[in-house]
Length: 226
Image (cartoon, rainbow, N blue to C red; front, side, top):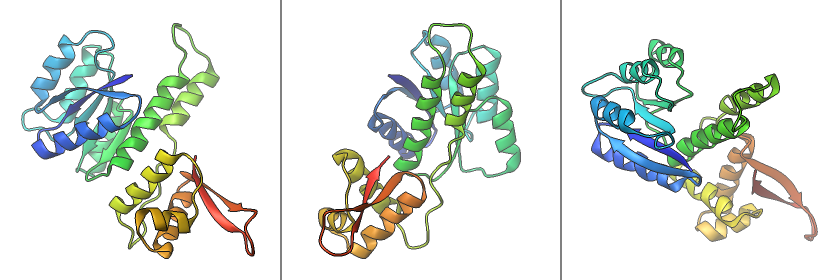
C-alpha cells in the first residue's frame, strides 16, 4: 500500500481529496494536514513507510506549498510530492518541478483525474528495483516514462465530468467490454450520449475500441478499459 498525506486548508476540498485517495486501489490515507506547519510536523514524526506521497496544496494559509516542498527536500524526508493548485502561472509550475515534484494537478479536478495521477505514480514506483542500491538505464527510463504518460485529453464541449466518471467506473467495475447500447441501458443515458463518452475514452487512450463479431448485420463496436 502507498501511504498518502493530504495537505489542504479548505475543509470541503480536504475531505474530498481524502475520500478520493481511499477509493484508489493500492493507496491508503496516512492523514490530513490543514496547514504547512502541521504537514511538516507529521512528516518529521513519520517513520519509514508511514508517508510515501504528499498531495500538497500550493496555496496554504501559513506556508506556501513551495516552501513546504523545499523543507521536505532539505530535511531529506523520503516522500514524493504531487502539487495540487488552482494557480496556473508558469513560475509556480517551474518552481514545483525544480523541487522534484513528481506530478502537477490543477484544481478543480475530478476523481478520475486524481486516480490517473496516482496510478501513473504507482507505475513509477513499480518500475524501480526494490532491495537494491543500483539500477540500470532501462529501469530509470521505464520509471520516468510512467510519470510522463499522457493524461486523458481535455473534455470536449458538452461532456460532463460526472457522467464520464460513471462510464469509467462501470467499465472498471465490471471488467469486460461494453457496447454503447449496453452502457446506455445500464446507466440510463441515451445511446448517442453513451457512444460519445466511450469514443472520448478511446481517443484518450484509456479504452480499447474493437468490433464485436458474431452479431447479425454490421459489427457493433465494443469498448474495454485498458
